[in-house]
Image 1 (tube, rainbow, N blue to C red):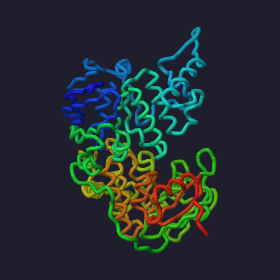
Image 2 (tube, one colour):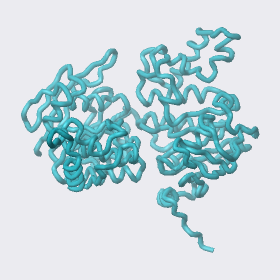
Image 3 (cartoon, helix red, strand yellow):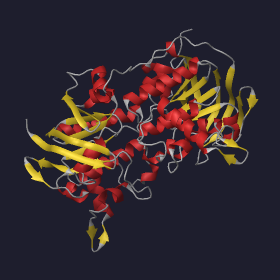
Image 4 (cartoon, one colour):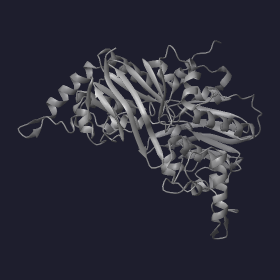
Length: 506
């Protein structure tokens, strides 16, 4: 075993939190080593120390057996360590070549030599199977191609160790599979990869070894051959986790959402939703599947009052709500778990207790006329924080200080604690760990069994198949097919998501 990297006794504390507590970690040359753990387990803190974004309180880092000091990212880059962050560090108005060469510019006669740089980048990206167009603008590229640019940028700086922090969080299943192929190719060429994730199926797909962190400690290191999904989930959470939620047959009621011939334009004024027809009944979960960017976001925004439609009709509980305001939609009996929890779900600069009454602060018992009842708001907030197991040092902590999983729990607590007949859940578990996913799934099924209609929009096929009673597939803004979940398979849904309909025998 030839070690490329060793981290010994790494400690890092923040106010009130011991993020890393004497962590030991080893990376072999040419291996893909997955760092697995819940949100807040200490994964990102550990690699941020390796990349020079944080300085450890204690511990040593050895590269090829020699101790090194990393005080800033420039030191990490000098030592051949590159990092692709979860949120890309690219400038949208620059070209691929300009982003990649930023900080390592090639010049000729005092001017940027874009032609030579583009040639080098084209040859370099082709060598590693990361073909990108050096002359394309970042703003015109898909998320998956932007991620390739980030990887090329790190390799262009001669990185031998590559850190990928939650690289599939914003990718479609197809893009994720392409990424895994790229990772295997890089590993075969001698690159060592630290792969941070909380998705169990991904570590089995691509990792050579797996180290599990929990509460800032190393719980253990294993291999995909030795591990099982349930074993890894238990290591991550510290208890047995239900990976598939149990639910009985639906008890259908009246139609709570009816969409007729709906047309909605996106921000570029293209027709993102093009004549969609859907119905959701009380007591069922209708899953909406599709590759991201096929109209799901615009559909949800139109239903919830965040975007105007250009044609068609939306009815909630038998009343027309086409182009109603968000407050009018909420008061119609709708709970909304938004796709963008930061932008549409929370006010990050507000305390938890205030976020929990964002939809009802102006009504009794939280307000009497023009006067808010802070004691009632605080009591309500404390009760929901306990009931929904929101991990926070105080009910007055700002929402922006919570981890991703706890932010989502905060939204779910607020939305599911109101009397609602229709739940719109858009990407409800994106970026969450197995413990938080289990919690959200159980709550969705509870709402369904209590008689709510659920519209579940997700790019995660496993989630759609596990929770849905019926499944609608969107492709290029159209509902290409709706079918019972019992008749759906990943293969069939994958074809529909690609716009391919199987001909039924006559």
